[in-house]
Each structure stands twice: as C-alpha cells, then as structure tokens.
Amino acid sequence: MQKVFEHLDRRIDTYEKLPLYTYLSDSRIAPEERLAFAPAIAHFVMSFSDLYAFALREEPARDRFQEIVNAHTYEDGGHWKWFLADLGQLGLDPSVRLSEALRFVWDDATIQQRMLTYHMFRLSLRASSLERLILVHCIEATGKVSLGSASTAGRELAQRTRRKLVYLGPHHVETESQHTLEEDAVRHSLNGVVLEDAVRAKLCALVDETFDAFTAFAEELFAWIRARGADRKGGADADADKVTIDQSG
Image (cartoon, rainbow, N blue to C red; front, side, top):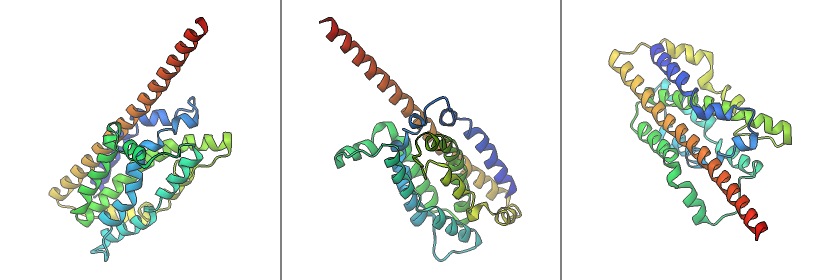
C-alpha cells in the first residue's frame, strides 16, 4: 500500500503546479478577484454530500477500510453549507430566475466541473472498500491543494474587510487536518497493508484516473477565470469607446 501512496504523492506534486493554483495564491491580485470563481464550482460542491452519503458510504461497513471511509463521509459531508455562506460573504449570491441559475450551472464552460462529479460517482458505486478508500484519499489530496490555495485569498480578504470565509477560508483547511483519515495511526496501519501486484497496479490506475479528472476540472476552471477576465476587459473597452463617441457627438 505504501507504494500506492507514493504514487499518489507524485500525482499531488504535479497537480499543485497547475496554473490555477499559482493564480489563487498570487497575493498581487485582489482576493475578491481570485475568489470570484466560486459560482463555477457549484455543481461539484453541491453534489459532494450525495457522493459521500450514497456512493462512498456503506452501512454496515464490510471491513476496516469501509469503516474509515464511512467515518470520513460523516466528517466531510456537510461542507456545502459553508460554501453557500461564502457566496453571500463574497457578494456572489444574486437573486436570479431558477431557469437562469440552472443555465449557469449547466453551461458549456463548466462541463468538466460536472464531469468530475459524474466520474467520482462512476468510480465509487461499484468500487471495493479498498478502492473507495483510495478514492477518498485522492479527493482529500486534491482538496488540500485547492483549499490551501484559496484560503490564502480568504485570509487576505478577512484581514482587509473583516468578512470571514469558511469554505474558502483557513477554517476549512484546518478542519480537514483533523479528520480520521489524517490520523497517524490510520496512515501507519494502511502503509503496512500488503497488496498483490495486480491489486496495487489497479489502485495506482485508479489514482491516475481520479487525478486526470481533477486536472481537467482545474484546467477548465482556470480557462473560465481567464475568459471572465477577458469579458470584463472587453466590456470596459466597449464602455470606454462609447464614452468617447458620446463625448465627440
């Protein structure tokens, strides 16, 4: 099992170097600007509790691996409430028609956000308890990168405006470190599990498939951020041209 975790660590090293996380950690950019991506990840965040409750959790647990998974699903399954609260704190919770909200969530620009949700369900529903445990480790590993980068902006926002974020702030990161999955005794016991070569290869392939889905998620989200910035710049330029025309007329 230790070799599986070593493979996972190598994928983390690559994942955390993606442009999205460089951008989110860049203190030269206003924190409000860096965190304006939040609405775009709504589908995955709001599906997360269902993923944990209905795809990864199994009651009663069939073995120790599933017990660890179950404990984690209860610890992590309600964080969507923090996300909704943060939208209000960021001024990203406008009143819109239901049809407009649905159109936004299912927009072509966020296909990979939704595909990530569907991939995780597909991988989870028929997985063994050991495979589910590896999936949870992958989800938590990518979450640490994402939330760690976002919390930098969340902390700066709190310092500047006294508006404290929970999901995108340091509180979420600190909570993650206290989960059962992170306990030294749990990791030590898992490292000692002996796997057949075929099982180890299958778990490493599962790690790769999961990180590939999260990488597509992160690359698309960064493209969404850049397109949004270009749209705003284009709008500003158009307004400037209009002012010039109006003044000259």
